[in-house]
Every structure is written in C-alpha cells, then in structure tokens.
Image 1 (cartoon, rainbow, N blue to C red):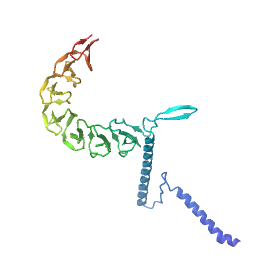
Image 2: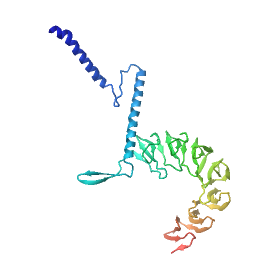
Image 3: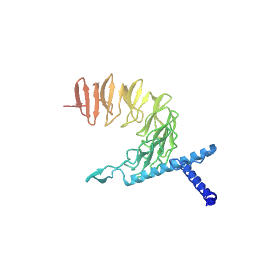
Image 4: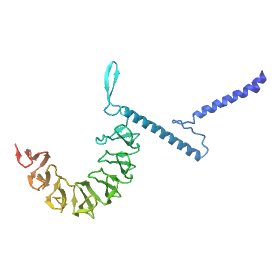
Length: 334
C-alpha cells in the first residue's frame, strides 16, 4: 500500500495540482475583453498583444453600436410605449439610444447621431448610412452635409458617400448650388458633386452665393463672380455684401450704397451703415440716425430716428421717448 501511494498516487496528485495552478494563473492573463496576454518575452509579443486588444475593443464597440441601432429601429423617435407601474398606466417617452441626436432633415429623413463621442448619420428606418467616425457634423443642406475629422472638413451626400476628401480648413453649407471651402487661408467653391468649380484663390468671401453671384475679395478690392468664376462686377469696392431682392450693399470711400446685378449704382454711397432688403425695405444709418429706404432708393422713413425696426408691413421707430408706427409706404399709423 505504501508503495502504491508513493509510486502511483503521489505523481497523479502532483500533476493534478500543477494543472490547477496553471489554469488559475491563466485566468489572470485575460483582460476585460477576454484577450489572452501570453508571457511577454520581447517587444514583438507586446505589439501583437496590443493589436489583439484593439481588435477586441473594436469588435465590442461595433456590437454596442449595432445593438443601439437595432433598439432604435424598434423604438424610433415619436414612438411611445405604455408600462404598468404600481397599477398605474404611464406613457413613456422614447428612450434615448444615442448620446446626442441632431435635428432630423424633413426632406430626406436623415438624422445625425452621436455614439462614443463620434458622429454618424442614420436614415428614417434607423439604419446607419455612415460609420460613427466624425468629430463634427452639420445638418443636410441641399443634399450635402459638412463633416470633419481632426479639424479637416469635407462633405457627404445623402447616401453617406464622401463626395470630397476631408481636406479643407473650413467648409460651409451648400447654398445656391455652391458651397465655399477654405484651404490655406484662401477661399473657393465646390458644386453639389464635390467638384471644385471656383479655384481656391480668394482671401475673403461674404456669405457665398446668393441669386447667382458671390462677393469675393481679390487684391484688396471686392467684386462679384458667377458660378463659373467669371467676374460679373469688377473688383473696385472696399466691401461688398450678398445680393437680396436684386440689390447688394457696396462700400466706397467709407460710405455704403446699393448696386444691381449689372453693377449699376441704384443707391449712391452716402450711408454709414445699411442692412439687406427684406420685403422691399432696408434700414439705413446716417450721422448716428436711422431711417428706411425702398428698392428704388427712396427714403420712405427719413434718417432722423434713434431706432428703426421692420416687422413685415409695419415699421416701428423711436425718437427719444416717443414711438411711431409706419406702413410700408411711409405713411404714419395712428
């Protein structure tokens, strides 16, 4: 019996103990994502381990994203559920599945969403049309949305395709079939397909294209170009602002006036400050006093008031403590 214990049973017990110790130690060689970390012998082993960790982290993140998207499909915004709590019926608002959600575009049904501090886009069914990889985003405007990664900007279309590389220092929303982009402190314009149609050569632009023309600066003077980069109004002004209702403010020798799309001066430069036209009216300032002109350049409200506010068809003015109301023709309203 002693011989059996010493020769046969003891080696079996020793092997069993060693296997258990090895198994127990192995448990501590797995990280939180269940990635095995072998004994590190050299830098190559450590590098291989770190790569496995990244793969496991990505797999876990992708699974979480898919779970969030699936839940969103089940509980889309606007859908509510009813639950029973202490025998009372409670209407539950939609559960937030994302860290943030942008405003849904009513035309294409696309919404920007944020997961793990990154932005992406989903369609009306809750399906992703882009990866969740962007640092910044904007709502869609005329079929394109501005996105950025590491302060480099570009555009995506409604399918989620990047129509331009993320290469610009800044990018603006598409308006009037063109979007202004900045690179190395110069501005140019792209079209809806992402093609550069106006070269990036202008030091400044003012609001981009409106009514087919854009105010840009070149050689310290302002003028207007069309969508094909043809100069329509020469670069002779100290400042130009965008067109509204066929007229654009321009500045010469410190005073503002208005030109039409052919460059004819409709309102001579005589004002210290002007606005843009809305509903055929525009406020103007001269010698610290405010008034209002129409598209013919006529002062329907003389520049004698401390304050002027245009609200639809009504103009409100203030002089001292007195308030006066006028209609669009300049007739006082009792």
